[in-house]
Length: 142
Image (cartoon, rainbow, N blue to C red):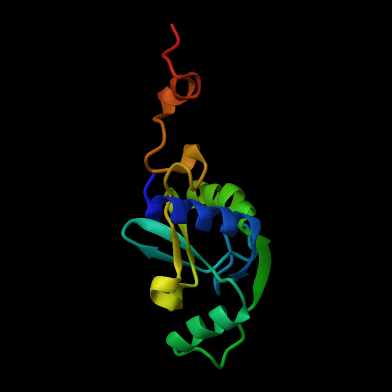
């Protein structure tokens, strides 16, 4: 493995073990409950998450919205990737990833909807519907 791949794996592991702030969007979800703040970019719906209040404040400032309240929930990174991402994908039909500390440029973290990051069933490079058994077993069933 290359150093960059090892660093990416370490960052993903750290994210999964960390509590992050998930700001709630202004528009409720289809069932009327609060929905996380998202952006659509490049055919992907991205959930915005932040490592702490200072990172969320930098994001608000960058948007010119530092004066408004930013309600948020604390969630585990693993729950965000394993539960929220599939829920958003199911509700929207769009692939879903996570942007961490979006206003922090290169210090931010991009967690795309690919295998090894999100559940295989919602990964853009995951197995096709009929290939799940073969993927799990490593061979085609007859």
